Amino acid sequence: MSKPKIIAMVPARAGSQRLKLKNLRLLGGKPVIGYTIEAAKNASVFDRIAVNSDHPIFEKIAERYGVKFYLRPEELGSSETKSDDVIADFMEQHPGDVLVWVNPIAPLQPAEEIRDVVNYFIEGQYDSLITVKNEQVHCVMEGRPLNFNPRELFAKTQDLTPVQPFVYSLMIWRYESFMENYRKDGYALLSGKLGYYAVCRESSVILKYEDDLRMAEALLESKKHTSKMPQYDPVLEDQ
Image (tube, rainbow, N blue to C red; front, top):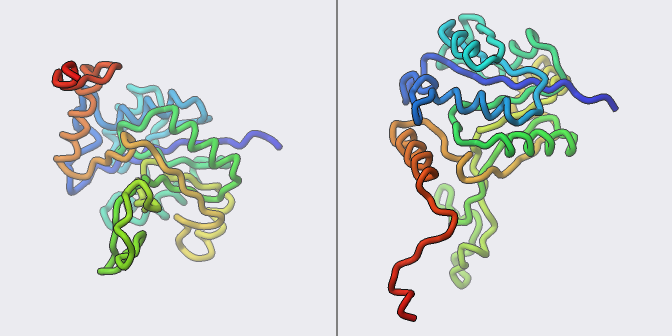
C-alpha cells in the first residue's frame, strides 16, 4: 500500500467575533497562529502545509513561516459559512489523500501529539476523526445523569467513565470519503468510520475568549519557571 499524501490546513478567518483577530494576537511574543504552524512543521508527517484564509494579510504570515497560502473564495469568509464547505473547497483545490485541519485556536498542542493523532488515524483506517478531552467528573445533561447513578453510593471521580467533549484542535478526513458524502448529503464533517482521540490538557486550552488567552499566556510563562522536581511546603521537613 502506497503512503497517503497528507495535507495540513491551518484555517485563519480574519473576522473572528468573540476574540477579535485572535490568530494575530501575540502570545509570548509570537502570533497565535505561529505556534500551530510550527507544531505542524515539527510533526514531520505532512507533505504540504497551507494557511487557508479569507484575508490576504495571512499570506505574509505563511511566507514568514515557510508554508503555502490559499485565499479562499469571498463567499466562504463569513461567520455563517459551514466548515464542510470550506473543507470541500480546499480539497478540490489541493489534491491529496488525507486532510488534517490543524486548528490555531489550540496553540499549545505539541508537535508530537499531532504526529500521534495522524498516525492513529492512518493505522485505524478511519474516514474522519476529531479530537476530544477526557473529563472524569459527574455530568448531567438536561437534568439527567450521564455517567453516574444518583441512587447508588456517590462514585469517586477516578472511577467514573470519562465524558469526552470535543476539543477541535485537530480534525481529519479521508478525501475520497469526505467528498463522496459531501456531494451526496451536502455535509460530511463526521462521516464514514468516525474516530476520536483524547488529547493532553495543554491541547485542550482553546482560545475563544480573552480569558482563554490569559490562561495560555500563564501556562507558557509557568513552563519557564517550573522546576522538574516537585516542591512542597516546609512543614513536611518536620515529619
